[in-house]
Image (cartoon, rainbow, N blue to C red):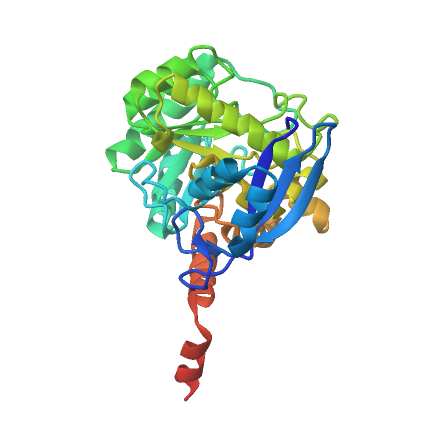
Length: 363
């Protein structure tokens, strides 16, 4: 982060659909926030942090000479997000993972067969997935890249079949040619772990295609990203990087309404970095784009538990996903669709209950 920077992280979150004095809606959705952690960069380096209630924020910002910046932050934090790829952002949306690979970290080989991949994708949609994310190259830690031709061979037939069935699809790739051919085959969203930096043709291609794009943060590249990842402040550094990528996309002609951001849990992050990002996730609403969260089956869950293999991490995956929803994440990228949908619906119902409704129900 640069010196003299200002960040506002929403705190005191309430909802869904619960009102309170001096509260603002979080990203225009069902949650609201009543306070902020104000983080202010110092000229000599480092930061100061202060908890400020929303009702007192204007006075505090005036005292430190940050009226305009604070006002812009609150506007971005509270403004409704337009639909992303036709999906309403006022409620959580589920993205199902279809890895057409032999070596993905959690389901490698499960859907390497085309028929199985298509059938599983249709089952995910039936279970409640709003869209599917199709990828043909593993980006797990230590993964070796595959050739462009092999990646195309894996994903294009799957995309054609699922698109023909009317399924909304994203293509999970860092190659411009794969993006182009996937879009031609029926995909309608680009999901790039390099945020359109991995291929010099990706940014102009995405701008010309005019499709929604998910920009993810990754420090390094898959083969080396877990070799001592380092940040000055993980959440603030990653926020700055993603904000810069959004600005670059806008400069290239991609409107902000076509962009979503993903902090990239597990991609060049230590266990502590991942936990810091999840705890401070609401900060990323300051970018002004929908927030995508991918925690499903990731290794930090096993490290916090009993080193379970990926397919035994569903309970931890759901716990992390719900923590993300409590901080306003709008799109959850998951392997276990039916189970996540059920958990989300129960969470929404409980969180939306008002105390007087509970009293009336028992009367």
